[in-house]
Amino acid sequence: MTSFTTAPGEATPPDAVHPRDSSPQTPTSVARLSETIRDFVQRWGAVWVEGEITAWNVRGGHVFGRLKDASGEALISFRLWSSTLQRLTDDLRAGDRVVACVKPDYFVKTGDFTFTVSAMRHTGLGDQLERLERLRAQLRTEGLFDPARKRPIPFLPHVIGLITGERSDAEKDVHRNAELRWPQVRFRTVHVAVQGERCVPETLAALQRLDADPEVDVIVIARGGGDPQTLLGFSDERLVRAVAAASTPVVSAIGHENDHPLLDDVADLRASTPTDAAKKVVPDVAEQRALVQQLRSRTRTRLTQRIAHDIAQLEQLRSRPVLRDPESLLTGRAQELWTLQSRGREQMSRRMDAGARTTAELRASLRALSPGATLARGYAIAHIGDGVIVRDAAQAPVGTPVTVTVAQGSFAARSEGSVAEDADRGASGAEETAPDPS
Image 1 (cartoon, rainbow, N blue to C red):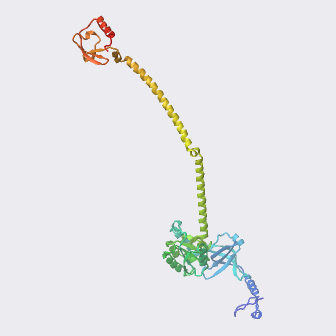
Image 2 (image 1 turned 90 degrees about the vertical axis):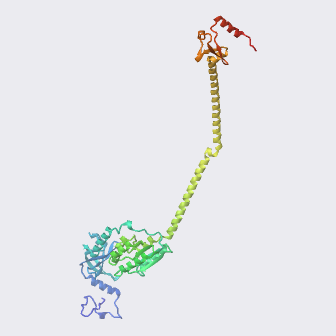
Image 3 (image 1 turned 120 degrees about the horizontal axis):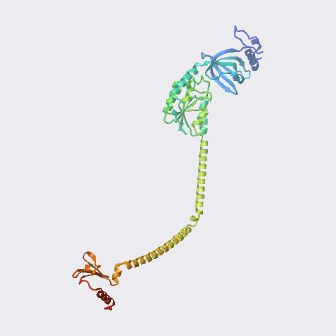
């Protein structure tokens, strides 16, 4: 067995070998030393401890975490197998205050010392988590988490302000992934402490400096994750309110999916990791080129389809008889117009002939009934004053002025009195039979 070197006054482990059993010439192997430690640790029994969970990471169904003492001066690592996790009735997470039954365990292969949890239950929220939850509720009430107040991230920022730890993996991840996506991207990096007492004041100063720089289009605050204890600075009320008041959009890239400081809620954009922040802030030049090519192809296809459609419509229109032989339509219309014109002319001629016949008949009737026709045959009309027609010889006694109207005008006469009817008739007959003076 490998021996332990004990200090003066300390009890030697029961199975330990005296230091003289080990020498530079006959050293003990690492495996035998680790086995001795494991055998010694396995003799310890399980104990119940109380503390606050500061880390709760699930990997492969198992939980690997840390438990902190209330004083904050002691910290142990624990492991919770998936079979034990399934038996737990409480929903546990980082920040919870719990009591747990733990048994120490030492891993020979890795030299890790941890505690295996066989039972765990709530004893109430940890003080830090309770304060954070009260602050979270207050900020939510004030509207600092409202999506409407969050500013959009520019599509292609000219300069990216980066607040991160010096020579940190987060800085490398952001730079590398951003430059892979857009080689011409520019950064203005300010190194700060990302945990501890200097974290908040240095981050506030860096934020104020980058926010005042007119060339910076977006600010990324990045850290490579960590347990809630180390991320407390990013839940500080001063930093959270400064980010909310900044005029430049701020991206929070503090940790991984299970790390959720208050900065994530108030930032304009939350990225799960620094790599994710680079992908969300900087567009991929290859994707943009592919998108441009796709849009060009779609535009070309659309224009080709539109032109082909218009050509087909033109061909369809050109194939119509009216456009293929426009004169045929005019010829047909001209023939129809000529037919209508002839028919109208014929109908008008018929109507005019009928009207002429009717007019002639009416003229003949009027002539037959007209006094002028009677006068034309040699008769005359005698009338005395006031236009009274003489119908009786007694109306015109001797000396009565008489107006005589004949076919061609009128003349004045004076009555000589009435005469015998035979004499009148003889005179009339003589007049009718008298030869024409011409």
